[in-house]
Structures are given as C-alpha cells and as structure tokens.
Length: 189
Ligand SMILES: [Zn+2]
Image (cartoon, rainbow, N blue to C red):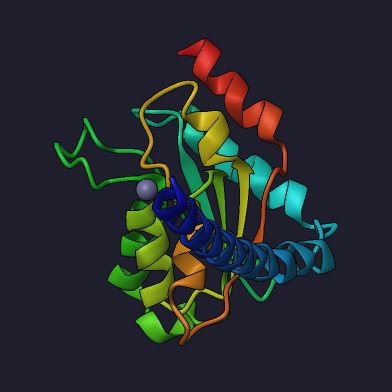
C-alpha cells in the first residue's frame, strides 16, 4: 500500500509535470494562434475585397465543383480560375491552381509575389502550398474548410496552419468574405 502510495505520489508528480507541460504546450499553441488571429483582425476585410470575391464566386458558379479564384495585382485582376477537375481529368485543377497556372503561362512567375488571391473556398493544403511557393502575399477566402467539409470531403488542415509552417514567407489571410454566397453555390449544384 505504502509502496503503491509512493508510486502514486510519483505518478502525481509526473501527472503535475505532464499537466504543466501540456498547459505550456496548450499555452504555446494558444499564443501561436493568438497573434495569427490578431493579425487576421489587424488585416480585416478591405473595401475592395467583396468586389473581387464576387468575381471568384462567379468563376465558382461555372466550375465542375463550385470553386473559383481570382488573382489581383496592384488593384487589377490578372488571372481567374475555376475548378476544372472533370473537364481536365485532373483532380489537382482546383480554382486556385488553374488561376496560378493561367497566370504563369503568360507572365513571369515572380510577378505573383505580393499579389492577392481571392478564392470562394479556403485553399486546401495543395493550393496553399502552391500559393506559398509562388510568393502570393495575401489570401482572401469566402467559405472556410470547416464550412466546406459539411458539403464535401476536405483535408482538414487550415490555410493558416500551412502558412504558419512556412517560416520563409508571411501570407496575410482574411476569411469569411461573402461565405454565404459561396456556400449557396453548393445548393444550386
Ligand atoms: Zn485546392
């Protein structure tokens, strides 16, 4: 019993240490999530965002799946794309990928640096990876991955999580712009 008690005491110690380390980790997570959220707040919806998002949503309405994107540079739309997964027999032909590929087909890829990508759905990890490799500086999305997952399968990794795993680039992310309109496209399909 006493041996067990001693064991318990040690276990408690470990428990406390584990709990502390867990709290620290949770705290760390909360801290790392905190500034990111704060940053999103610091970078709220801009006046021009809705107009460009409407363009992305109009693209989405024409897509094989209702996803569309528009790339904007210095206030001008330089590329658009919609999901062409069926048309192109290419499951990677997401709206964002199509918009990026269209742009680089005719322009130097370096011109994407600092551009803004508007997308009707939060970029999946593949698209977010492509966005980061292209140096796109800002992403504005309508429906979140969490919202989209209620309509069709999603890889449950947020665009922010992908961006935070890429220390060489800062991507500003603004979500929830016209999300109801983007989600309504799923009901029309
Ligand atoms: Zn994608």
